[in-house]
Length: 309
Image (cartoon, rainbow, N blue to C red; front, side, top):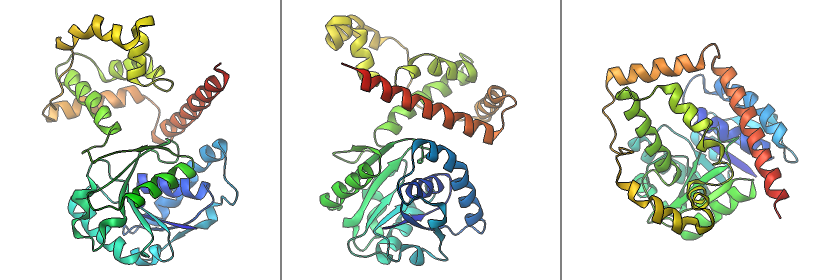
């Protein structure tokens, strides 16, 4: 089976590496003049982590082919992963081209981080084969994929896409309806906006905010999500007791969900704070550090679950 990856940036390159690790032939296309070099660097950088997690039979980086055009990349592909930049007009044009360039039974999935398929499929001659397959960065390492169709997507296509992702080892949220930003990004965005508020108001530093998660609730979330974590916070009474006891605190001004104005001052504070936290660690060092940590966390959680009575 051939998978086509359209767009070879950070997300598209991560997808290409993951599909190769699952034993597929991968045909990629990106209009940037340096796309092939960047893509092969991304695949090479991801391969040690993918090897440690386990390669499928037939996994081989030599099965990556960089095509000269979108149509060439799609020729013979049964599944297409589109990872073009987050520009609605561009997404509409690319998805229309992909529908025209693929076989009638090929699935075209978009890596969009927020656009509903109903907004992106407006120019496609046949939107029934278009579905969102939203990954998390880096796609070769983070298992989550959010799958949702648009109003004109064939429900059978949505199910096939979800089954495809599950079959290659992804953890799939198959959404019942379109929601801008999907599920995980909306949760992530709420936390991100509150962090920006705290920095903008000089209430906390970038380093303090990151430590508050990595040394606090972030250590619990790989095992239990926020809802089950709060359920356990209620003791034997569970979520009901937690809500009865702590419900009034929801009225307290603990969070501000409206986004702050991204002023030059706030931007500079975020950039400077992040640089200070990174200290002497450059980008490749931080990527390798992250990959090792995520692998260790995932394995630890799997071991704990297997040991549960």
